[in-house]
Image (cartoon, rainbow over all chains, first blue to last red; front, side, top):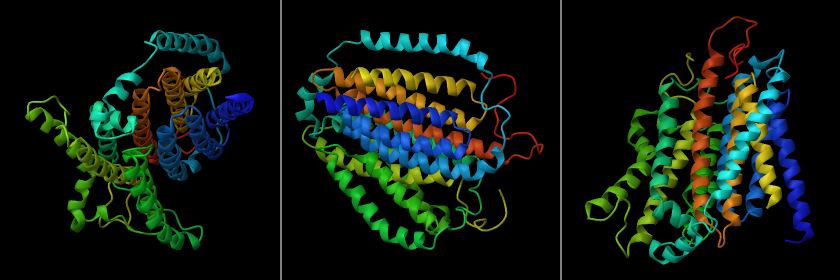
Length: 314
Length: 102
């Protein structure tokens, strides 16, 4: 790695610890949230240093981007109530419990990690990579070897969107008043770029870091930007009702792919030999679209409604 | 790699302590996110230590990131509902329950 690499890692680690401390300890909530977003972005650098570019992409797009947008929009509603805390944390006596307890838990986790079979599954994945239909090991694991994880993950995302929508209507001015007249114009100009980048990431996923998750996150971020630029979310109205099915398209396609495998005598998620590549591509497109729309749906913080958009109601 | 293993440990402690002792629910949520990042970091360091590079923990962490954003989104929606609830003027609407931190 060299001396420069070690120094870089050390500085990065220090910055991350400081930002995490700020994110959980800063007196001002806005300060805390912004620290957390920067923390996510620097984490992306750490993932690159650890040779995990897929995670870096996902962290930058979903971890820092989508979570940051969600946190900031929620903060907009919470900040006025936060005011003056008499005490930010439980009394300091709690440290007497938390340092030993946390240390013990951490020690246990590290012991478990240490005891894991050392070589990991790298060899096995590389050996079966030719059969998987894609050239990138992480995509092969995500959409072929362990596609069940991806199925459940999209299920969790859909469940989150359903939960949020079931809490009630979306807040009636969906976005706060525009701080700058440049944003709407810029948002409209940039949206095609978002679509292009998303398509590129999706296509790239078969042979290099990329794939459905970063692509979906980028597209979702584009949609959120359009919303901030004054566009109305069309998934709210009944005339576009069928489009709502895209929300569950990813889950449905993955489930169909899994069940088809077992119907034809194979295992759950066993793709027919030869067409594994195209199957994965179709699944990635479906999952990417679903993830984009689901992240957007999460951002709405409630079921978008047709009539009460500008009216009263909470 | 030692740097990242220690980083994972420190972040874990910061996150754990924040999660259990913060009085503000949004702070707890931020601490929970720091905590999950620490766990992801441990996974990825283990993957990096393997020879050749192990892609399975990477896939698991990608799944974990999406699950974390779902959790965060649901928790934030609940927080906003809690804060919007009519309560006493001087009562802190988003503070945690008084006197019991667990």
